[in-house]
Length: 163
Image (cartoon, rainbow, N blue to C red; front, side, top):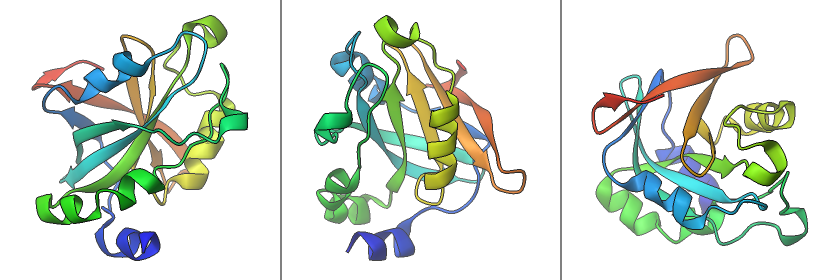
């Protein structure tokens, strides 16, 4: 079912920016921990060259033995399957993910590590954007398929450029 959803409804295109319309990013500080990475699923749409984030969902399903201060492995499959009717009704889809870099282990940076970059490149066919967050900041990235590189995206929050 997930494969069919991704095939039929997954947005195409490489965004050049990210737009967050409302309070969606508030989920990040609510679940942020200073010593444990957290994962979030991003739902929205790609409009022209902009990834529009409409919903941020904290994942409740990290793979337990990999969740630490310097690593988290998680999937958004439960969040996607739980929202299939809603996604179809509201005409938006899974567009990416965010994970945190805790202040106690990584200094709270929003920069991608080499491991983050390699993982994002490997999963970019399923997620168009990926974010790295701290308690009060987030940076968004996309994969440039033609150059096999990761690009930092500008993003707008309520119309104002923040990153």
